Image 1 (tube, rainbow, N blue to C red):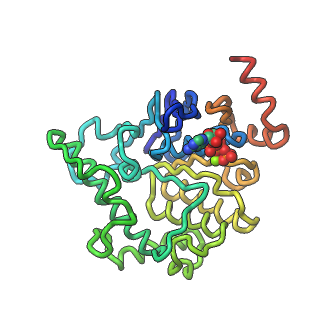
Image 2: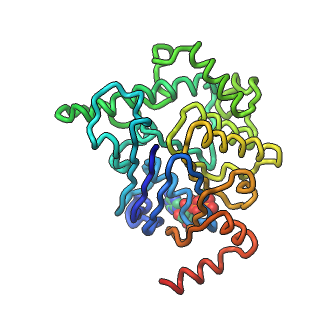
Length: 305
Ligand SMILES: Nc1ncnc2c1ncn2[C@@H]1O[C@H](COP(=O)(O)OP(=O)(O)OP(=O)(O)O)[C@@H](O)[C@H]1O
Ligand SMILES: [Mg+2]
């Protein structure tokens, strides 16, 4: 079981006099739980997602983002692990290292990449991640040796080796088939180029598939419900529930609408205002927001401030 613990997180745009966006975020997401993050446009939700993933556009000025793991999360690691190998300060790690530890970020606006089929992308992503995981835990075990070559994007999914990875084609295909069945997805999807020519809704569904394949401990899904028709919303919701139920993924779901929460029932709902989580509650909080908007939250927050 993994826990993502965010404490007093402050971040600003990484440029001179860059705008301060996150102003002290506290939030904890455990694997197996679904948390909804709501809040007005521009309140800092996507920024939080990107800071968790390690986006270089932002500079963290204070606070911590810690990922706590347990034995089950590192069952694939073939090394003697120390106590500190179970807790990672993500802010000290590169984006690909964070992904290797089990953090998945679904983008609000997924990119299109021409010439890369979905299957190739996913297989390379899996292989790159396996390799990165191994290195990460090995490096930790062998601290004396610093090797900067391992930093950065050297093993990013797009540049990973095409054919000499750990996961072979046959193994990959059967995993893919299993996950597509889990998500009720059409197999013809797979030969398509990565997000190129996919409709907005199909891209969102692809994101869920990517998460299912990578089996992250914690998935941050940024507005995965925007632009989905009613049927696709249900498909995507079913997928998100499957991530939680079948893989124990903890989900931080950023959304503007209560609607998806009818299908993906959140354990907690949080409201972000001006770069802070100012209110948390159960599913009923999302319903109240849908009815009454954010003004009352703002008033409450000011009163108690
Ligand atoms: N790289 C950047 N450079 C300058 N300003 C930025 C940058 N990233 C975010 N901001 C600003 O920070 C604020 C928060 O943006 P963010 O995208 O996190 O909001 P959001 O809560 O996700 O909004 P939405 O609901 O519209 O997606 C906005 O005012 C935005 O303009
Ligand atoms: Mg956003």
